[in-house]
Amino acid sequence: MKRVIAIAAVIFVLDQITKLLVVQWLDLPSRQYIEVWPPYINFYMAWNEGINFGLFANSSEITRWVLIAVALGITAWLLNWSRKITLLWGHIFIALVVGGALGNVIDRVVYGAVADFLNVSCCGLNNPYAFNIADISVFAGAFGLVLISNKLDNKA
Image (cartoon, rainbow, N blue to C red; front, side, top):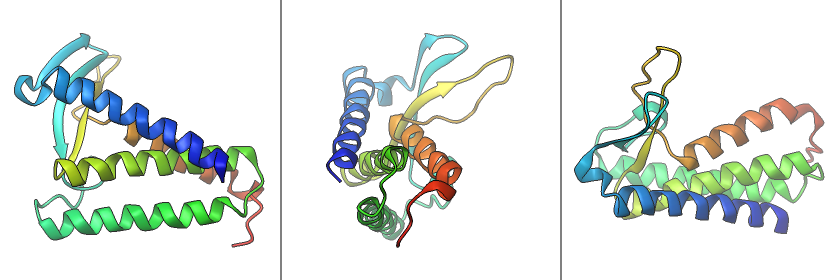
């Protein structure tokens, strides 16, 4: 459990520091767009009130608090589950999901929406979506858990 919490804390802090630097220090909400390494990496301000790709976004206070509650519930469940897992990669992937989920929960509480700003495009394809470190972490952790699910000591 200590390992999961330590890794999740690193992800959480990394996510919050990048958001503080880009959203606050670089004032991305006012600027809306900053070229970083065009056309591959740019900062593009997007406030996500829903889940991935803005699904279920409707500016409702109820939706906001439901998403916060769901994220906290999943986090609690994953932390409990991690106590029953012995595989290192299981702990790492759970920690990635937990750290990212908590990073986005803080955004929802503070801003009312998740601060997304990373925009990556390549090879002539223009990506219209923005994301953040927490999103990458949640996706990588969930994908990793799916990949190793048959190897986990699942006694839950």
